[in-house]
Length: 379
Ligand code: GDP
Ligand code: MN
Image (tube, rainbow, N blue to C red; front, side, top):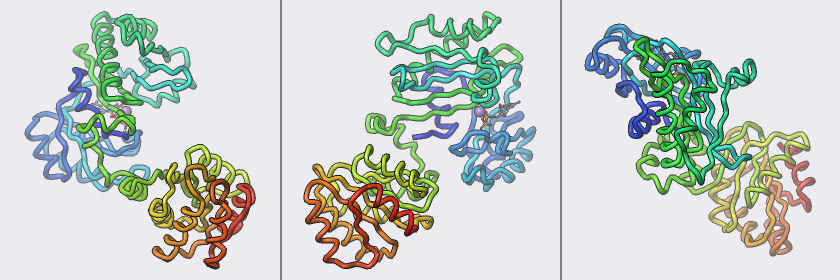
């Protein structure tokens, strides 16, 4: 789950990472009131779950409250790479001397949290990694040992921070960021830029904070931050129905049981020249209602032109899945061609059920490859 900048900063604040004072506003008038309340120049920042807002015109300085109102008017309603801005964060403007970068992510291949730090902040970190890889310091933390003060010192020294005051503040922020990362069960905490003011004060000017969805049940306060409206509407519907669904860009709806099989199905559809519209995993049970729910989500996507059902029955019984398909087709009035490949437990019975139904849009295939080919042809 991705958090908005203002939510990430709220968590930063809880862990003692310095951030600027700010207020949330959903209208130009509220932006003006917020600026009046804070006094002095402010920055009006679009709150959307995507980066690069500055370049897209989503971040603007405002000298006066009237200015803040005008800037909010411009930014609210703006479309930033498919995300419509419906709220802005009004923050006390900072003077910037230098912009650094600090992040911690989970490095799956090393099975350890990974810190990255560079004094070349403010720009895309991918750009720094490409153009001046030596300027990017990487440091893993042994999760059993946990954070040790030398981690912070090492990042700061290897990054080439010369000023002792900055060194001390940044090293402290590194420790607090680790604490926030571990306690919130995050998979990414990024501060870009981490600024130094002309007075030598270090502060987080931006926040990218992603929490592990599977750990959210342990963090009701963070789970509450979820904004259903902002997510992809299909993914929101899927979550509501308990369907594991990821929207992709193509025309062939993909449904499998088990993440591995579904992933392979997505690959095979691509391999035979098609383009998958989604990833949808029925999971282990695959009861009829689950199939109905999954098909409802998949067919809500107007890009879908054919659906490929790839089921390997283990715990999942193919006859149950077949009944679910028929129920869904009838209930939802699905007219898309549906290609079904059933294998494993009760596969014969499942195929028989489908054949007896004699629905003209249902096609059965014996193998995954043939099924994918057929679905791509029909799409
Ligand atoms: P992003 O573009 O989505 O990464 O948004 P950021 O919050 O990182 O802001 C982008 C850039 O706007 C920063 O790198 C700064 O250069 C600038 N910016 C943001 N806030 C302030 C501020 O308070 N004062 C000044 N002078 N610049 C700011
Ligand atoms: Mn940023």
